[in-house]
Image (tube, rainbow, N blue to C red; front, side):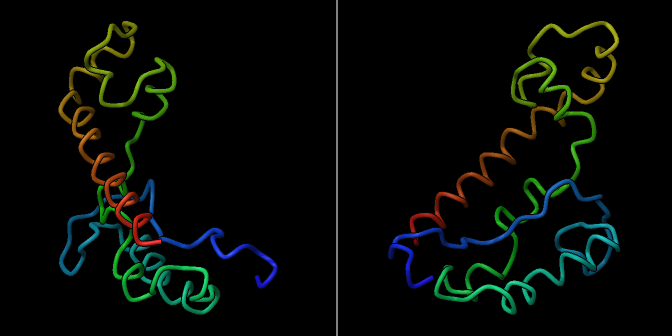
Length: 133
């Protein structure tokens, strides 16, 4: 570490992605039990294996995942559909899709559109943390 420049890579936090959603008691991140179990271990793992001199203060970055639960839950087939049509997930309802995808898009158009705000929230928190570096 001492050989690296002063302004080197710094840990700005962690995020959980593609986790199964579950709305239950004492579950702020709305994670399925198995995912909640592993998510709860992340802060201590970081504290044990990452030096504070290469991160933002642990108290700030380990309170919760970056963006809270904005991008934490699975989007099912949304990402693969976005890749297939070469557009962001939230644009899928606004484009012409193949016949086999029309029912999926029609039935989930609100969910597709909601991903835009979720990713904006996530990006805003990333940028905020980068300003602290």
